[in-house]
Every structure is written in structure tokens, then in C-alpha cells.
Image 1: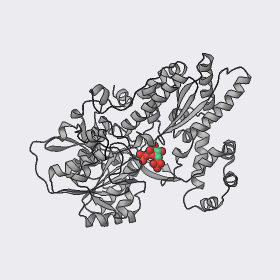
Image 2 (image 1 turned 45 degrees about the vertical axis):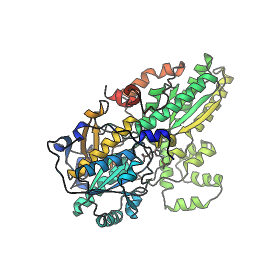
Image 3 (image 1 turned 180 degrees about the horizontal axis):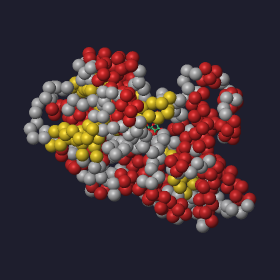
Image 4 (image 1 turned 120 degrees about the vertical axis):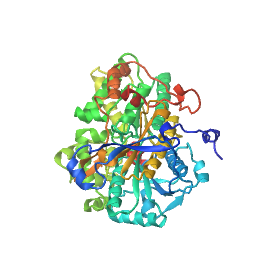
Amino acid sequence: MISPLQKARAHYRPKYPDSLKGAVNPVEGEKTTSADHHEEIKKMFPHTYGMPLITFEKGNTAEQKAPVNAGVILSGGQAPGGHNVIAGIFDGLKKINPQSRLYGFLGGPGGLIDHQYMEITAEYLDEYRNTGGFDIIGSGRTKLEEVSQFDKGLEIMKKLNINALVIIGGDDSNTNACVLAEYYKERGAGVQVIGCPKTIDGDLKNCMIEASFGFDTATKVYAELIGNIARDANSAKKYWHFIKLMGRSATHIGLECALKTQPNICLVSEEVEKNKQTLNDIVDYIARVVAARAAIGLDFGVALIPEGLVEFIPEMKLLINELNDLLAEGSAFEEEFKAIADEAARRDFVTGHLSPESEAVFSSLPARFANQLTLDRDPHGNVQVSLIQTEILLGEMVKSKLKKMKKTGDFTGKFSTQYHFFGYEGRCAAPSNFDADYCYSLGLTASSLIYAGKTGYMASVRNLTAPAETWIAAGVPITMMMNMERRHGQWKPVIQKALVELDGAPFRYFAEHREKWALETSFVYPGPIQYFGPAEVCDQPTLTLSLEQQ
Ligand code: FBP
């Protein structure tokens, strides 16, 4: 059984650029260079470096081209709209030649390596149009980076006669898509590789990629929940709500939610790092806001905490880097560590291997939090910030601080907390009209890149604050977004991660208003995503995009 909303939503026809309707003409633009470290990137990507930008314009006559068999992979964390990207690819391929076929590799990049796949048929796809989730073919976090994996992938693609592969993923997956494109091109394998910008975190963006898909819907879901909580806080007037929000590195989600709901506090990791704030500085700041509101009789509030915060506090960053090195998968240390059953003994074991600075920080942390920092790393070797309860750590530390302030008369109120973590709640929501349209357009653009014979490109759809019909569909060489970065002790070519820019319009707007929002109760209650109704209610892009494009 499907819900009445899903039933009605199945009939939604995504809006997309006029340039992708009818015949499509790829127009080559300027040749590109990488974001930085030009010579190094050029050397590593001799076959896919320096390619021109491609813009798709309206063509004159639609020619019937030879059928194409393509494969598609959903990679990494779920993001609303992934099903519509696949729908766009499918419709685009069938439009040019109805004999074309689309295969989905199951469970993420692992499906390509392990030869797990299915053919996506029109009937099967129709059940998934305009729905959230990645369950159409599943997703996974296997990293595609070894030549042996590339060869295994080629084996199955040759068997299925696949000549193009679309990888829908975040910055790491698209970096790997570029490495794969280079490898197949160098070998003359006859398989094009195209990337699509996905992640609710919003940190895959640059001058050619205005937003990653899923960010719009996820932030709308979180903002609805934050608004509900804010209204509850303002009704009962007895709790401070500490809300941790997903976004493993950048604070785009937190900032967008703050712009939408006007909470009393929103920490921005990028600012914490720039100002070299310590954990105690952050606790002092929150305690000051709590005390200032208490002084005017307001013993309640809402504080937003970005999931990635701990990695931006300089002393914690050093500690986490040391822990990452020690706990690297397969290291002798990791083996010994895992053999210890008792948590206190595990902490002692870790302490003995840290630098004196990190040892001091690690020992000062509450035991529960210290344990969380030593949990399994993700396949990219990163600490899993979604498992670290930063909101509770901060709440508990603020409580102790306020106790001391009470003694000196600097705090006169009450402080009761409620803790929340919003992340998974938003990743599979039914895509907003914006994401439904944007994703479908990205899929159509990917299919146009395939027919244009391109490889090593990412589908790009720009001009996103204008009506969808006037969006610009394009292809951007992935090498254009790359630079060299040190990752886990090695220099690697990677797509630059877009962090919150402290001189950008969204942050500046927030910074101009946050003092007022801290003291006064200025909450905004956005309510749930609307799918049917007037455009000003249903089709609005994020405030981040609107402010950036003002
Ligand atoms: P992607 O970068 O793959 O899109 O995933 C982002 C994210 O949603 C983060 O916000 C979060 O930290 C992480 O995934 C959680 O990962 P998992 O789903 O493996 O728990």
C-alpha cells in the first residue's frame, strides 16, 4: 500500500530547463584548469585534464542516435531526490533512443565490484519517481579506488555492453569517479564516467555547482522540526533544547536552519576554527547567552550544534587526528585496542600513546564522550561524527559552568536541557519540489553528457533561484574542481570541500542578527514541506542560495 501523498506525488511532473526539451546541442566553452596545484593534477589526469566546459543549448532537429547502455551507482549517504536523478537519466536515454538500457548497480560502488546489478525498467522506476530514499537500488560507502576494483567493474560492464557509468555521490565519490574516468580513458576501455553532485551536507559546491541535491529538502525537514521544538520551548518556557544537526564537516545545514528558524544560538564550526576557540570558550559563550536570557526571565531557548564541530576545535582536531592515525583500520594498535574489553582500560591504553597536549585533552573529557571518539572509523578513515554526542557534552559542560556562575551571582535562573539529533530524519524525505526538479534536471543533463560522448564530467545545473525552465544545464570537467590535499598522511588529488565562507552573504546575514536572536525570542516556525500549492510556498530554494545569488 502507498500513502495518498505518495500516490498524488507519483503524478508530479518535474520542471526542467527548456534547453533540455526536444533536441539538445552541446556547446563547448573555455578550456579549464584545476582549482589549484595545476601541474600536479595535470600530471595525474593527463587524459581528463583541461577539458572545456560544456553547455547544453536548444538544438534544431532531434536526431535518433545509437542506443546506449548505461550503469548508475548511488554512493554514500542518502539524499532526497536520488530517485529523480535516476528517472532523469532513464528518460533522457530513452528519449534519444528507446532501445537504450539503464542498469543499476546494487548497494553502492560495491555492486559494481561484486557484479550485483539489475536492469531498471519503466515499470519499476515509476514506483520511485518523486520519492525519497535510495532504496531503488540501494547505496553504500565502498570506496572505488583500487585498479583491481576498476578492472572488476569493467568486466561486468563489458558483459552488459555498458558504455557509460553515472556515479551519484559527494566530493569523495566524485573524486573517485574522476580517477575511474581517467583510468578507463587511458586504457581505451570505452566506458564514459559521469558524476552527479549529491549530499545533504551541501559541501559539494563551487562556481559551477551551485548546490548539491538533497540539501534543500533535508534542511526544510530539520527546520520544520526545529520550529516545532522552538514553539514548544516558547510555550512551556522551561527547557533549553540542544539540537545537533548533521553535516559531517561544513556547517551549511546548521546555518541554513538558523536562517530559517532564528534560534538563540547556532555554532558555526568554520568560525570556531578561525577564532581558534577552545571547548571552554564555546561553553562560556553558551553559558553567557543562557545567563543573559535568564536575567530577563527567559529560562528556555534553542541552540543548534553542527555535527562536525569537534573536528574544528583546534585542540580536539589534533586529538582526533592522532586517534585517526592510531586507530587506522588494520593497524597493530587497532588490533590491540580492540582486544581490550573494558572501556576504562581501553581509554588508558589510548592515553599512553597520545602526545602530551592530546593526552591532557583526552583525559579531561567525560568518559562517555572519550569512548565515542574511539569508535570505528568510516571507510575513508574519518571519525564518525554522527556517533559523537557533542550536544550532550556541551549541555553537561554548560550546566557545570552555570553552577559556578550561580555561586558568584552571575546566573540567577534555571537550566533544564533536552537533547536532539536531527540527521537521518531528513535524508530520505520525499524531495521538495526544488529537489524533485533539480534532480530530474541533473539526470537529464547526465544523459546528455553521455550522448555527447563525454567522460570525467560532472552534471551541472545552474541559475537555480530562477524558474526551472531557465536553469542552465552544463557539464563541468571534474578535474576543474580539484586540488591536492593531505589526507591521512598522504597528498591526494581531491575535489575541494566547500566550507561555510565567513565573508559570504549567508553567514554575514546570520552574524548581523544573531545577538538579537540570542537575547530576544525571535523564532520562526517554517512548518512542513508543501508539495502542492502556490509557488511562493512550494518552490522556494534555500535561503543560502537566495542570499548567495542576491
Ligand atoms: P554523504 O557525504 O555521503 O552525502 O553523507 C553525509 C552524511 O549524511 C553526514 O551528514 C553524516 O555524518 C554521515 O552521512 C552519516 O553517515 P552514515 O549514513 O554512514 O551513518
